[in-house]
Length: 265
Ligand SMILES: C[S@@+](CC[C@H](N)C(=O)[O-])C[C@H]1O[C@@H](n2cnc3c(N)ncnc32)[C@H](O)[C@@H]1O
Image (cartoon, rainbow, N blue to C red; front, side, top):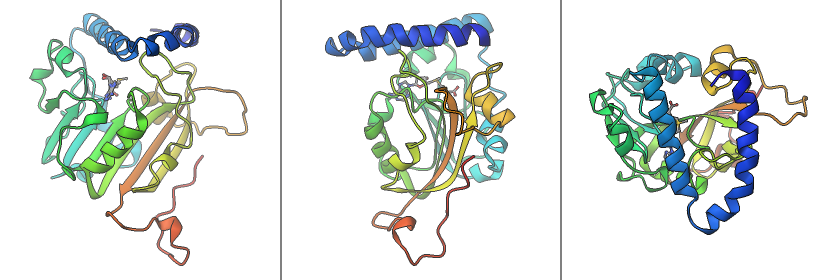
């Protein structure tokens, strides 16, 4: 969809959805409608693009978020809400690269079996992996898509090994839509406070001529917190999994070695 059309259509669908959502939730149809909508979206993308490209993921997972490609060497990597494009194909030096997404059965029909990575069909709320199975967990443009954010946070904390890295890039500040049932805010890092330390936090504007988290990270316009308009924005977080029982850095008043969050912009 063109940026101008998207700016008009997205708020309209969000408003329409706000009206019908209570009924869908009452009838327990909201998830089914969400998955149907996402499946249709990706089928349409496949029809338009023929081959679903994935060239931009390497910079998105590395240079655009200040990480080295080497940070993934020999690591067990899990990408949550991975989509059907082969988000981790570039990481051929990782020990393991797994994409998890409830729509994997649909994505198999779109060609994911040709990708050099593992796919597992599951929602983020029920990750079918033992505790501490991964060294890096990523979620690009997917945390606002999950059904239950609190359960998802617990599951991420469970499967990520102590000392492991969680990379989140997500759109915040948008009204709930069919596929994105949560309006996330700048408090997202605080919701991970129990088991994680914030190592990096960045607030970026969504660009009107090129909406999307990828363009936000590429063009890096700092979010203007003095501008009171409600609007979509991009939140980039890097969180480090604390060892079980370790005390949060902000709770140790005497600690001089806290990994203070990077200045939010
Ligand atoms: C906007 S797509 C992002 C895909 C990919 N991460 C990317 O950036 O190209 C959102 C993805 O979240 C997935 N999703 C929806 N509900 C989910 C859930 N409960 N757990 C995990 N992923 C979910 C969707 O199926 C979809 O593939």
